[in-house]
Image (cartoon, rainbow, N blue to C red; front, top):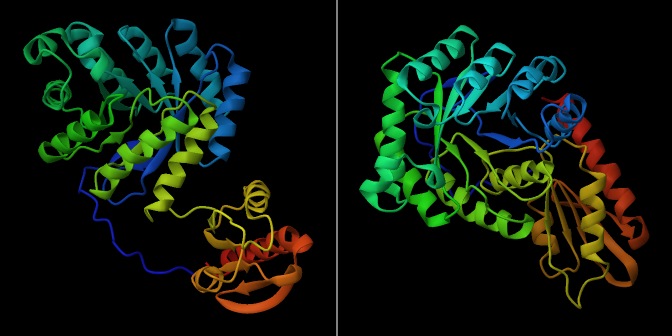
Length: 366
């Protein structure tokens, strides 16, 4: 059960590109990605982290290739994961070529940093020959020298000019399987740059607030920045950049999309902040339920409300609901209808049982 969104987001129409088997742009689902923080040369550790990232709900994953040993390690890494791998390349064009040859499905490059145009053309040929897409990664911290001199400081116009310059390099060689980002650690600069870029190009856009910070501050900055753009219909793939476990980046990214009704995956919990009226410990209950229901991938709405003030109303709009009642007698709602009383000590086991049952039912009826 779900209520109709108050507002439907109309996405900007962009071209569709392929990143391995994942389609990015157009009407395709907005993909979520993260980046490993293991040494790419530690093949086993990198594979394990990629699997963890994917299990959290990632569609794409990026790995750093700073040297030849790292780019060649992709051959073994890509054989042992079933998610498209993006190679993060800076400066040295040979690393990009090696990554494409060794299984990368996308190269994150800034053509302006690669060197002379012939080297860029070699990278494009390697990408084309190996069915590999490209992300043009423009960053406020590494703009081309002449553009920085022209604008005196990073600004939306500078980021967009850099992006358009690099787009032309690819278009001139008829390479069109690419997406673009114009990232900054400044929320307002990023939003303005992406809005300007969206007005002048229809290539798919990769959204991100780069170097956003720690888990709490970075999640908030990313939610504001990415959320503002997504509400405008801008964005085809996203990354939340946190100084934390990459798995948490996926969790936050998916939550941003779920909050905007742009992605339905897993259990969406509506819960109250708790107060003196609560009939059971709401905060602890929600924490435990989040952990115990993390394996559920089917979209299900669940309300956990500590008292009868808002509980019945929220339960009427969710698949499963618990509303706190007096003397430990709490009410279970199924599809908005009162079902049975549940003792406080049994809330977690009962909710897990009902959610798992609902997931099976929904999968059967697909």
